[in-house]
Image (cartoon, rainbow, N blue to C red):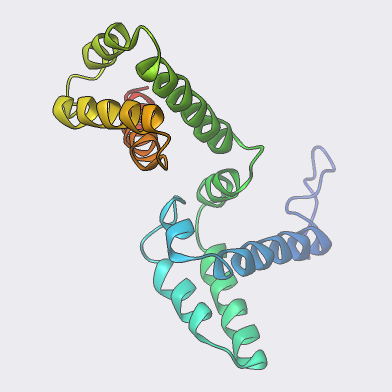
Length: 182
């Protein structure tokens, strides 16, 4: 029995239906995690003790055995704090805070790449290197030079894409550092 508080008359614990809904939400989250690739899982804030259970669930192909393993995964997930589960959900959702931060980093990397390849690329490079002292100066300058050559010779944009990846990684690394210092 749930019981009531004698003073206020409020119930002391969630109803059985609310507990069931919460358990089904965790089960659905576990199914979504099991459907993800290793690269996608690496981006999520999943505790280390949960990863073996997710990998085990991914390996099982038999329908009933997989269902049983998903139930076990959900049971292990329910042992975690609600904050951990909320952080995983937030990181998975495109509308969540993590999705917005990732999108912002991508937009900044694109704008920075366009500035580096534009007419005033030297000033943009100076600003970038001043803001990110640990950046690989030589590699960035080489990528900018190669991307300009590719554009001039109408070649496939290999260095153009590599420059974007390098800038994205650099900005994402600094965004994580800024987030940790807050």
